[in-house]
Image (tube, rainbow, N blue to C red; front, side):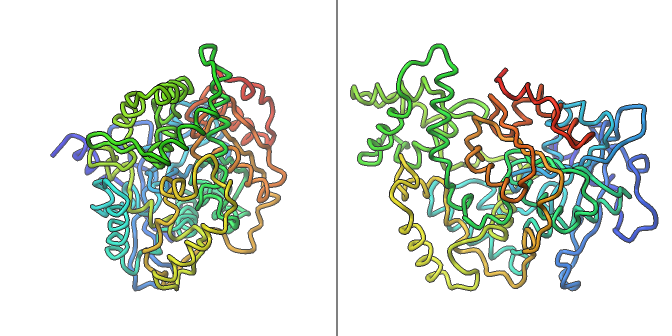
Length: 481
């Protein structure tokens, strides 16, 4: 047994097990200290797996509370839902520990969403252990759906939102502030739509529109254009970058689309090129524009080496050594949540053959330049827009957001990093349709999520907003560090 495994078991053993109907709230002071991190206290709540079917059993949802550090009375707690989907709240606590201003007057409450971390993490081995091709990924998705069976549609953001409410009840808070990033704002919107009376304020960082009627996230619409914009922006901000990065990207895309580069164990086709552009830098950053320019110049001169070298460092399809541990990230939950939440061109009740036909028709209907400078086929093989084709049809599902969602008048602030290529500003701006009165803060120099890249700025603005419901001084967001 590794030291890490021993610690996880110890934390699980010390979780305070409570139920929504328990007599009296489980205040932070009554929760046991989390082993290995005394600044947090550990708890859990037992909730129904399917609230419409008591016979389906229960699931234990883990949560973690960091009491406020100031000497004065606490304001509303800040509830935090992680991204992914598939990430555990516990694995992301470092984002907030490096932002101490958040916790001066607010308790912080992290939650492992059902299917992640210590909340019954979904372990689909063929997904969790990695795969080396698109067909292998398709087979892994199908097997994961069969493994979950009737529970396959029980891990969407609607159910997660209901779990958050049970945690709120257990902890005895009346109103909460809510901070979430990336995919987390989907369940944040689900919670706010169902329980607006318990929402004080919302912060959505690099978030997605939960309803997504335009299927922007399903197809990754707007991201190709964002990649071009960001590469140009990064070049302009660099004193050592000289050249037309957009032209270089267009050339590379056309070149590998017509003639993929092949070397031993390496193929750079269009999906692999997009992967390199999106993840070819350090710590999840895009490939530096100087690198893009260098690869294009070298390829024009007949040298494939720079492009192949980068491809060796950043494989598109993850192998067993490339994926995270189950306690930090569940690949199975990632699929289960998205396949429950995202609207698709097909009906969930359609047979797979009909799903494929409707998917192909929807893809063919896009205007030719929708994913430029990439082809529709190349882009959707990178973005994998058809990952849910073989997912089981739901017997009953809880929508991420009810159709009559009272979101418009809730106090909200939206953060978007101007170099975020994962959920770029082109996508995040759609949140303004749901929150037209929100303050929209574009954070210079921030990738994904903004709080992870600009902890000198984003927590300060978020804290002021939670305390006053006003955005306040946002000047720090205007210039990169």
